[in-house]
Amino acid sequence: MTDLEMVRVFVRSDGTGGSPLGVVRDGAAVPGTQERQEVARRLGFSETVFVDDATRGEVDIYTPSVRLPFAGYPLIGTAWLLREHGTTVDVLRTAAGDAATWADGEFTWVRGRPEWISGKRTQRFPSVAEVEALPAPPAGDGWLYAWAWEDEAAGTVRARGFPRRGDAIVEDEATGSAAMLLAGELGRDLRISQGEGSDIVARVCDEGWIELGGRVAAAGSRPL
Image (cartoon, rainbow, N blue to C red):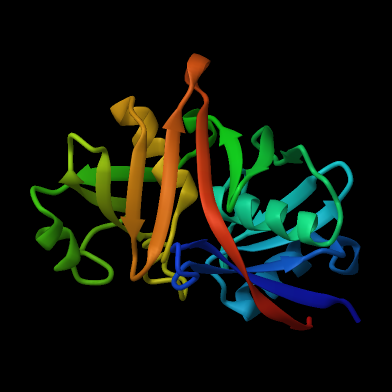
């Protein structure tokens, strides 16, 4: 029997908060797409990662109801976890493309492209209070990233993410791909506070690349 390892991604500087992620480092133990989808549904994390080749950085990402070609917080969490287990990984290979990854101090980073992200829509609200007052989920269909400026000059944002897929995930605690998408749309670096306690950094680079960074904390392991 293989293990499920759990981390929290985008934790705050004091180690609290962050979004729980499940990682199956021995992806071969769950070999089929249908089987992996069922495991992800049963586990109930916003996203679950199956590592198919740790050395090459080959990964496969699932929500409880759909397979994802690319996602931000699972890649950051997986890169951190692999390094904790002694595997130096410089790239994570997803269905959408190859995402470079590296560690810098307490932050783990990945680099991706907004065009790798499909099905998410951002919506600006006039104030932080209006974002915080939204019901979970708001009325409507489709993945919504609701946000407002905390301090526009400083590039700080308050955000909440609502998948609205009809599965058990009513609200995402942290959403790296949506943060990446927002930074690309605005064309500027951002510091995003999402959910109840997640801290996300997005940096705009040349040629359309976006760097996404955050802290990660271990959250234990158990038999899958």
